[in-house]
Image (cartoon, rainbow, N blue to C red):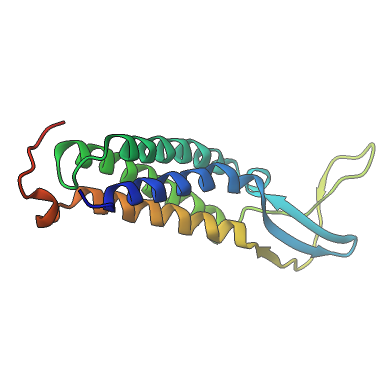
Length: 162
């Protein structure tokens, strides 16, 4: 049997772990009059909570792929591949939304007074953790697509068992 399936499982597991870890790192940075400020993916937008969930789905699917080693294109590989692709599409969508349209505002907090937005033209920089998250989700999706598609070499003498 080829080593293609375990490598796809390992890549999917690694990408899933990255998706579970990266939203906690700084995703945004801004230079303010009071100094530099950074914000994690969780702190800036409420939608990034879905990334660790998708990451766990990807990691489990990758581990199942390594454990069961289904031949590409078989029923089991198509089921696992479909879960991988669905989780990856959700992760790419939410990570891209959070990275490309950051919902970050600069707010002044003073003791005894309500928080108020600061006026000014602030430049919000998207940090590499956001882009790596998108890339990891896309890579996991590509691994899932490769599990879905059968190669003639893998199908010779294969039974379609689940």
